[in-house]
Amino acid sequence: MPVISAPYAFNEGHLFVDLESTCGYPLYLKCEGFNFAGSIKLKAANEMVESAERDGILTSDSVLVESSSGNLGVALSMIAASKGYRFLCVTDSRCNLSTRLLMEALGSEVHVVADQDSNGGFLGMRIEYVRALCASDSRYVWLSQYTNAGNWRAHYRTTAPEIAAEFPELDVVFIGAGTTGTLMGCARWFQEWHRPVHVVAVDAVGSVAFGGEPGPRMIPGLGMSMRPPLLDESFVDEVVRVEEADTIRMCHRMARRGFLFGGSTGTVVSGAADWLARHDTRGLTAVAIAPDLGERYLDTVYQTNWLQDLYGAHVLDSIEVGIPAREPKPASRAPGRRRRR
Ligand SMILES: Cc1ncc(COP(=O)(O)O)c(C=O)c1O
Image 1 (cartoon, rainbow, N blue to C red):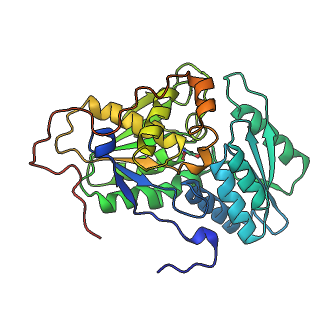
Image 2 (image 1 turned 90 degrees about the vertical axis):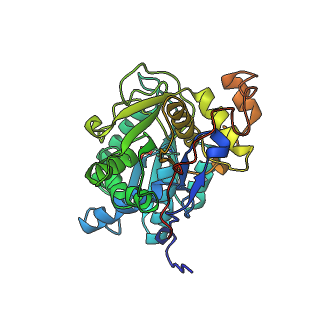
Image 3 (image 1 turned 180 degrees about the vertical axis):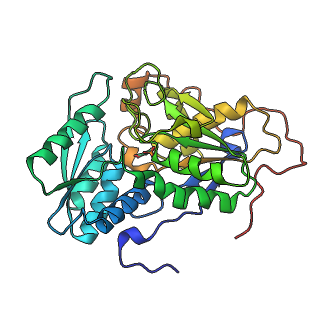
């Protein structure tokens, strides 16, 4: 029985959903939404705050400031409230209402940037806003998730070894790319592992993280309107890009099975299913990472009017629920041979 006295001290790191009956391919989904911040960003936030404390950058009169599409903002709000720091989150109009209210409920100040940058995203404007704040008052401390090595180190220390402990025969891992902290931490760890693992980055169409044409994106978390400074593509074997309409369909397919995940999980699972459909999956052990759960997206991804306005009246018409028709798998090797804990 875990007993904690600080909200950041708990994280469920060993929960996986078997998605084979939902997406029709052998795929295990690592669930990162079971902590008091509700997302994978708790790990990066913890690591960055602790290292700033160790380095003496954060002191009792500091005001933490960060640009976030939401989840890092919630995690920092929670940590700041618990440790007695002030926190100001700079977000944009794509941030879900419930996420913003959550940050305010935790005592944080939230500034919403409404202007888009030249790539059609908000990131450039958010960063300019944070820089101006820091220039105006030396008490502001910007941890900068886009450049802070603590962001990827958190996943090198925790996320990748958690997957490896449960799937010692892992072959392929699917990881969504925002700041690329999760991707780079896991990719670095797996490159040093005794077993070769194929690392597939999943990005949103319209993101310029790995190059490509900028375009409108409405689902927060994944995708960048600039090249992520943490990204080193030499650690990434492949990139899969997903249209937002496919993200939406996958979210709803999982929801109709009772699994309500966040928007970016729909992107990662859709990209993984697409990749698995193009490869021989016999004996393959595949894991994807779900950064958060679905409650924060009830007014967007799971709201009919929002969906129809953005993606058309028929976006959900073709959702298949259940296993699509495919060749039966030979029984020789189980898809994921899990070591029992
Ligand atoms: C919901 C969600 N998915 C995916 C990501 C991407 O993670 P990373 O920034 O580690 O690339 C984030 C990051 O904020 C997120 O909030």
